[in-house]
Image 1 (cartoon, one colour):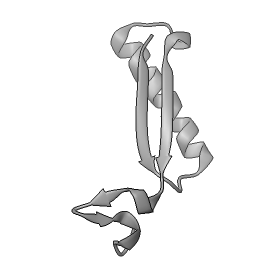
Image 2 (spheres, helix red, strand yellow):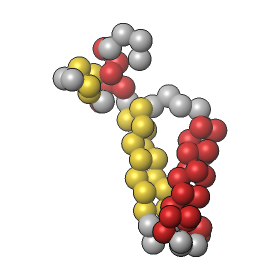
Image 3 (tube, rainbow, N blue to C red):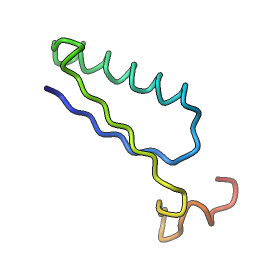
Length: 64
């Protein structure tokens, strides 16, 4: 059973996350030739205060 774990920054609309799960599932099914019902996709949203780029939290970077 393939399990895909994706971490993204918080704040995306629920519909975008649903579409991500659908697209990733379809890609795994096509690539690995497994039944769709066997694919698991876990999406974790990380607060911008807990995601660092170059030593700085994303919440402190202008324009994010």
